[in-house]
Image 1 (cartoon, helix red, strand yellow):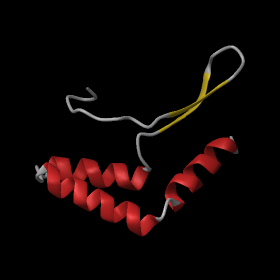
Image 2 (tube, rainbow, N blue to C red):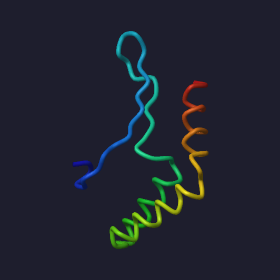
Image 3 (cartoon, rainbow, N blue to C red):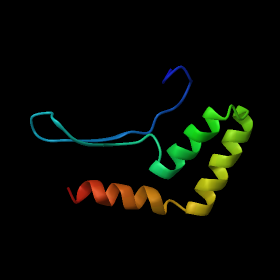
Length: 75
């Protein structure tokens, strides 16, 4: 359970040798996360949220994920 909902989380955590978190990414690209939060706030049915997110991912073609992770690696 995450924030009261069931989910398979995708998180990337980059740690140093002492176990300190240097960067955390996830569970989804920022733009997709904002879409999700907006739809949830509007109380859009779960199935419609899934479809909207899948359309976003299909259009994005993982470019946002790549860009965000590259930005983390350049810290």
